Length: 176
Image 1 (cartoon, rainbow, N blue to C red):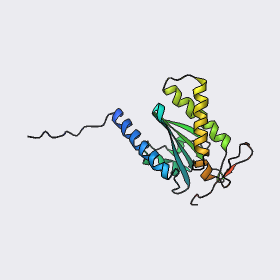
Image 2 (image 1 turned 90 degrees about the vertical axis):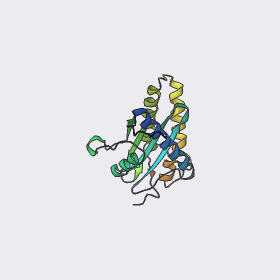
Image 3 (image 1 turned 30 degrees about the vertical axis):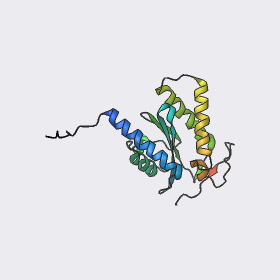
């Protein structure tokens, strides 16, 4: 006689494992299509495999952010809880960098600023207190988003990303 499998409520660990699997699938898919352009925004997932963490970078409006959070197994964020300026959101083991667009513009310095917050958050969660590790992580995140297939390069109308805080990266292929 076969034993029936009992339906169990998933534990937080099971949910985290499934979220990680989903994120890994997204990463594999992103290698073929590294950015998402549904509606008014773009998204890129940057895996940090050595730390079993990840950073999701979302450029766009609040609706686009919540769509991406929902599709990747994260809770949605209420409009009243979200600032209108760039921010880094702690999602358990992962970080989400949200870059709201103002007139379709995103600046690299502001994105790097949020990457520092994401790196600090991730390293604190893993009990790594090494300044050099933070520098390498910020460098890695910057390289990923500014690579030719990265979200910031895709957002840019100019393939070269400007570094002056007075200059902005203009949006392209945005579906508006």
